[in-house]
Image 1 (cartoon, one colour):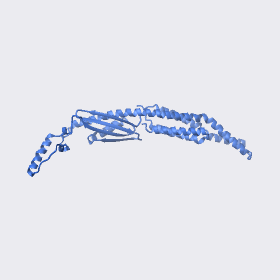
Image 2 (cartoon, helix red, strand yellow):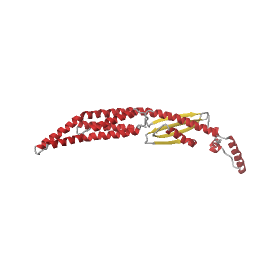
Image 3 (cartoon, helix red, strand yellow):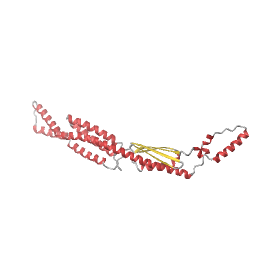
Image 4 (cartoon, one colour):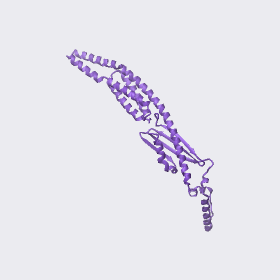
Length: 291
């Protein structure tokens, strides 16, 4: 499966002659898996089955699931009233009213209480639960498609930020030799000025220059950045779970970028480092929402 965002929405519906069951699933980013159901107790017996269906498809995310049902337009609550129960109640109530001399006052809506409904038929209940699973499966498919579309958009955004990062990185790479020459010339000038007043050991001075230049060399950081960028490209074209790996790579790129910034004294390099750090933060933000 291609890269997914953890943000998405899916809905599904299933119905028969009596009921229509509707399922809506909303998901956002989360470090792990978090599933919350909002539904009638009628469906409590299949909650674990529904959760398993969901987690078999998605690896990470926070999911809010809304499951509801309603009667088809040709049915009303009165269709569920058990006439036998009502007749028995009226017979008893009339008898008690006559015996006590109290006038009996009854409204049709009085029989919409649960004790007057027909006993739930096991077959009908199983049918309704089956509708819930059917609607849930459809909602999962809708959510998957939504997350894939959003994931594709996020990958494109990350690639743009990666390109801007690399443009600034190439600016630094091109200035590497200039930077080293600048540092060396600066050191020589400073020692030359001091040499008017102090006796300078030329071999010792050259050793110190070499040591200092090695400490300020950024070729190692540049090589590591090359490797990390290749790894990032590989992740963005893969079909695996990439969110956490992108976050790790951004940390590594940030470390190398900061090191280059601390070693450099050139304004052009410092400005490029700032832009690189901005792009890394944007990549991190987008990567956090990828599964």
